Image 1 (cartoon, rainbow, N blue to C red):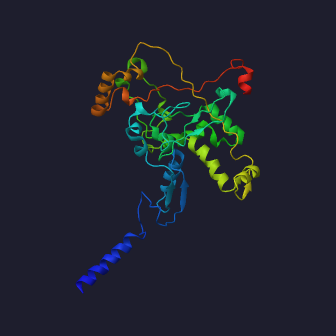
Image 2 (cartoon, rainbow, N blue to C red):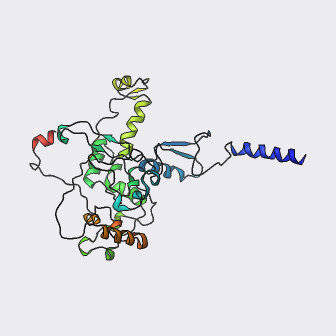
Image 3 (cartoon, rainbow, N blue to C red):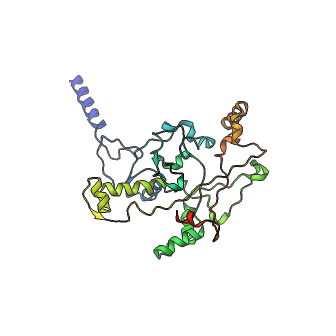
Length: 310
């Protein structure tokens, strides 16, 4: 009897291990187990995780996030942890590619891009493209948000009305200018930031590309496109997958007589920098290679008509 009792207990334990208890997990799901949630977020990029975080703030609801990729540390190792290595596998057409890190989407051949396809970076990992760890956050200009508000006739989208949400979405740490070179101190507008916000980042590259795809495969889009992919039409919406506007990134290059990331090609300097980062978390490896970015507004006549029409 004791042995049978032990066997019975083992079987009960086995059964309990393979059914989904409540609560089963607050962090990771297992694809083989069925579960239901109040909200399911498709895509664990920066936008998807932000939405999930806001929904999960209500303890009465359950939220699941489905992501095609893995944690960035698995396909990208320390390259996701060390800011100076953030630019690996990026660029117009990088020699080295990482299909476990990026969707590897390319633009169509266009005269404006020298007739060549260009890589459109879109990370396939938890946290999306922010997992690359560039440490950049570039808000749109007040004029950009004003145009958005005007286009949809909704002043909720003005910069002033969006600012409280920006402040809420970041746990901001002011720059330590004492640790920076004298010619690279960073200024900021204090009232635009908040040190008590949630440590979240919001970017939309992956969401802009994948959301239209999700709509199309579920039958929402132009009837012509839906028919081509052999999907039943649910709603004929001509605007799906159209009218994406994005900004070009132009990085000017100058020869200078100071230490830059090019110095890391020197083996002895690289070894010194690794030691600085490993022991004190300072030095050039804490810098992703870009400190200043700006949206340039061209006055009338500065850009040729063919360029504007391209």
